[in-house]
Picture 1: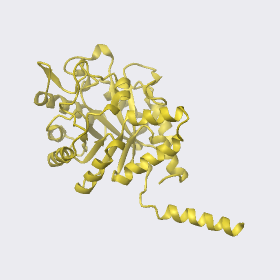
Picture 2 (picture 1 turned 60 degrees about the horizontal axis):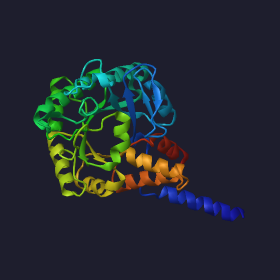
Picture 3 (picture 1 turned 180 degrees about the vertical axis):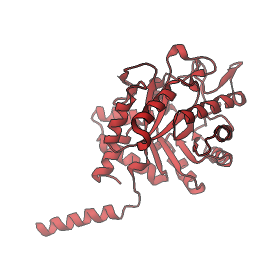
Picture 4 (picture 1 turned 90 degrees about the vertical axis):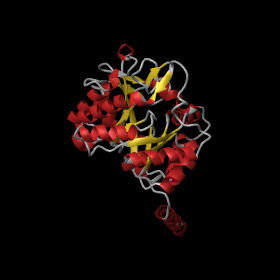
Length: 328
């Protein structure tokens, strides 16, 4: 019996030693929703287990994540309804919700954490679109200066990286120019280079209050039938100076992750979006799947496809699984 036990242990160790796909907690990014107000810690019904914080309580969420082994975070700002307007002014004002959160976290944690910010107008506009509207249409060119102002304001407030998600053409070039001119040439840009018009975003839009009030975002997000378009858009962002690239969503777009990883030298990040998270949570709650096993398997699939970074609402669970040796 002892001999068989030793052989089994040896076999298990050998399998771990020879794994082709490796995961590290350092490559995980955990999303936070930050809303206007004080003393806010509220559960999100559309994303079980996720929480909306106000800038003054966000440190509690960060502390919990750090305890679980996650130190990289991306912030999504949620202004109050009364602060939304047609231009999305709340996105770049000095005392905006993300700007407040960045300053609070820097005071509390310094360089112990790495902070990314979502750069888009959809959470801040009263119409819910990612750009300015004229005659019922999103205006690409007139939106660019506002997105650039937003990125610069985040850098001034203390972010480490900006992640523009609005899918306006020439966004990366506009942000790079604004950051360089503003004295922040070292702030990297993680571009949502391949962001599809996906039904998987539903829970996020509910949590962020960013559902479009009319129409949809198919005119500036990508048609999920298209693969070559993704590679073309990624190449454009690379040419404009992007430092990292996002493919979003993740599981339904493993082919895009794989092709992007093969073609481009820049790091590829995959965003396991709210719908992917909610589906796993709902199936687990119904007793249909083993949540931890499916979370781990899904993450490995994303990395196996070629992603080097994973943005996920399961980041804390994944960091713990890596620490325990379940994956990694």
